[in-house]
Structure formats: C-alpha cells, structure tokens
Length: 281
Image 1 (cartoon, rainbow, N blue to C red):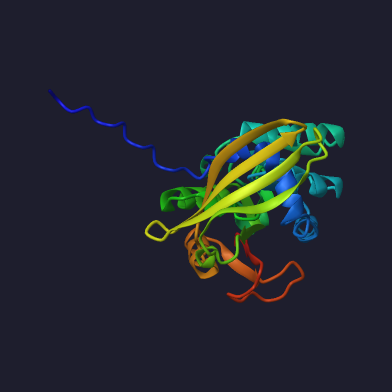
Image 2: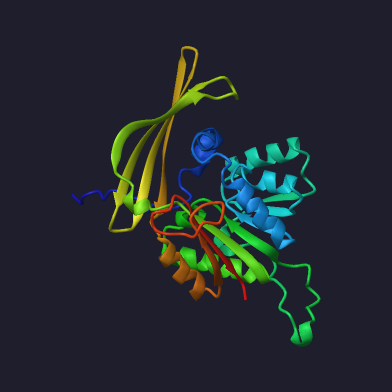
C-alpha cells in the first residue's frame, strides 16, 4: 500500500498575516511607533510638490495626515481589510478628492510610466503621468521576502517615478539583532472602538538561514465576560542600510541622504531610525 504524502507546506509570503492584523494595527502603532514619522514624511512630500504614491498604505496612518496637509496621494496595499479601514477614515475626513486608495501588488504597480524628457527639455504628451515621490514607510520593503520580489518592486517604482523624483524608504532598525523570546506580553490596554481590553502576546523568532525575523502575534480581546483570540505571524527580511543602498543603486536610484532620526541626523548602524532618501536621476 502506497504511503500518503503530506501536502507540501506553502512557503511564507510577506503579505501573510496583514489581513488579520488590520483590526489591531492602529491600536498597536499608537503605543509603539505612534505618529513620530508623520511630520518627517509630510515635510518631504510637500517639498516634492507633486503627487505622492505610498506603498503599503494600510489603514491610512501616513496617507491621511499628508492629504490633510495638501498632498495629492495614491495609496496601494494588498490587504482589503486594511484598505477598508483606510477608506472609512478618508471618508470621515472628507479627503476623497485628495486620496485615492487602490488594492494592488507593489511588484507590478498599475500605473502608466512616468514621462521621459525629450531633448531640449520638452516633455512627452504624457506629462501628467508619474509621481513626484514614492514612499515606502516603516519596514514596507522588508515584507518582500524574496530578492526577485524586491527587485521587481524597485523596478516598478523607478518606472512610475518622475525624473528628479524622490523615493523614500524606512527600514525597521537592526532586525538581525532582535532577541528571540517566547510568549511575552508586549502590550495591553483598552481600545476606544468597541470598548474592548486588548492584550498582545508576542514571540520573536530569527530564521538566520533565510535572513528573516518572524513575529508570532496573539491578540486577545476581552469584552465583559467574553474573550476572543486572533493569532497570526508577520515576517520581515533582515536587510541592512548598506544592503538596501546597493539594491537601490543597482535599480537606477541615486542616494541623497541616509538618516538616523526624523530630524536629519546622519545615519549610523546604532541609530534607532533607518531612513534612505534617493532620487531618480
């Protein structure tokens, strides 16, 4: 009798877990990252003086403050539950004329090529196409777990970014040095929406062979005597600033700044913030 083979385990993908994370994303970020990065990206976007594309717009944490400041913005995300929350917030803020949200794959951005200037400085008839800035906020590009996916995304960004446009990237700082731990209560507190008490229990694992840092998340909500639990994993690639710089340059970008905080301090490996600004020559 032939042995029955177990079905092959599906390889991890960077987008895994984000649909499940949607109800808790704003609650957790308000207690960790908060809005510390928003003024920085708002200033960069306003200085670019044109339409902005945000990769991984999520629930609109960055998109909405930028739009309120007058920035025309398109946000792309793969997660429908994340975008549903962003659309609700855009509607409440009455920013529908300034923010467009699209469900899509950042490896294959669904936009026309940016115009190529003609000799003598004249632009093509498609001058309205393209973006003045593309933004990949906190750890967005690290969710691309395979090199071919990162290369495809960088090529796609280069294609839709106007000449002289800015590409801003933030990496989660120093992921390889994060200590592994199991079942640690990381956060707890009340959610204003729904009046639930939330506890986040987290496990951090390092897959050194693949260069991944994996966050196993368990969110437990308590409403009175009723408790519900949601578990999922988020995986990030452990890329350093020099490694990302090499990939950006290979994709045709010119590095303009490496920053170690949101006030312009120069980057070094010990910095708490890892921001790369580049341009399309």
